[in-house]
Length: 253
Image 1 (cartoon, rainbow, N blue to C red):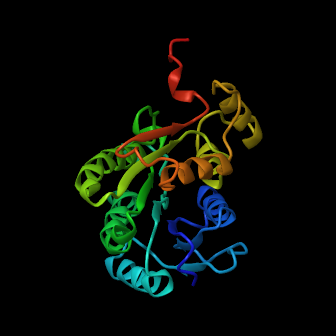
Image 2 (cartoon, one colour; image 1 turned 180 degrees about the vertical axis):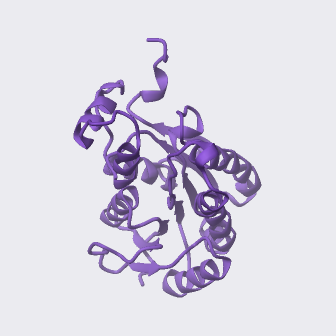
């Protein structure tokens, strides 16, 4: 533990965006606490702390933040990145699948913020929620995921108002198509039968204004911008869309 360093807690630290975010914050000199429902599958940064737990359960979140407080005593930023995706029609989505998705994508954010508040307040920390372009522009067979990400966007705005008096800024990142295992899984379940995964990814890239899929590192840098009080001190309650221009083009083009 080094109390002179800024500290961040990142959920979903084992996924594509989470892993890149852990590495980028560490590279920038922050002390990192990473959390994931799965065990760590990479070399976690030296001097950091990885906690393997399910943050959809209140008792687990309470333990997580007790361990975090023992490790760092403060949080300059909380990054709520953990999420799951269900790509199927609403009529084929079970109640259990809906509840599991909402538990991870929304309930875990609610629980984490309540526990993190006492560590964020003394240092006027920042909260960055990772939403999705599906919060503002969506597609067929992904309604539950879109609903959770839209709710997270509204939750961000409301929290920014509530926490403004404490100078705790709350913003959200809306990534578009990013080269992660979640994107691969979604494309594998999607349409265009008979096409390879790389063909589907190439087709997706062509439909983006910049002509490519994003990288986890690009999202990590955007998250860092909103988490860093030196760079984004006058921004709160805002969505930052990082999608290569996918949402700016008319569907009729």
